Image (cartoon, rainbow, N blue to C red; front, side):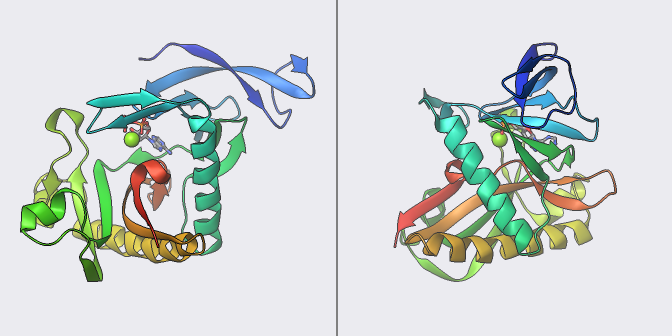
Amino acid sequence: MEGKAKIVEHKRPKLGRLKSEGRIMVITDLIYEGKAKRIYTDPTGSESVLLEFKNSLTALNGLKKGSFETKGAVNRDIASLIFKHLEAHGVESHFLEDSGEISMRVKKVKILPLEVVVRNVLAGSTPKKLGLPEGKELSRPLVEFYYKDDALQDPFVSDDQILMMNVASQAQIEELKFKALKINSLLQKLFSKANIRLIDFKVEFGVDSGGKIILADEITPDRCRLWDQ
Ligand code: ADP
Ligand code: MG
């Protein structure tokens, strides 16, 4: 999927020569195209990348598909609002700045191949699997890990399985849980201001150039199960 070039608009006239209405047009290369986003090289530096939010909707690992116009722009706005809110409350993420309408500049990280899920209420497949009632409020949030591998359909992995596969160390597992729970309590408060209950959500983390684990990818309604309060 590499090799496609794209012209993107940048807010700040940093590079390039073609000026159009105060914006600079620069060419970037497509690095990766996923189900929900595209990643492009950042013409302003090699330590960052541009994350573009697509209009596509997918469910069940791409089995169900759809799309609607402006979805990418809305999701980019929500993701950047959430990253800024978390940053202001001490959660470091890859977010650097918005760029254009549907993309953001983020720190390039090495993504840990783990989907970190936090649940406040049992919903979806979990209550069925455990023979518990749907909608059961948990006395403390659950953190679960899934191994990020499309071909394997992102299977659930235990802490010991993560260690066995050398995906993360014990200390990193504890750090991921701690960070995921902090994000959870901040997001619960944020959503409740809009009369929304955060039932569960998924996040990804990456390791930055200094070896630090930071929040990466996206937090959007696509990654959250939200119910009315
Ligand atoms: P997928 O279909 O693989 O879930 P997405 O559509 O979510 O892909 O595209 C985003 C991809 O970019 C994901 O594989 C995600 O792990 C990766 N990614 C997210 N943030 C960063 C980052 N800061 N640096 C490098 N890769 C990232
Ligand atoms: Mg993804």
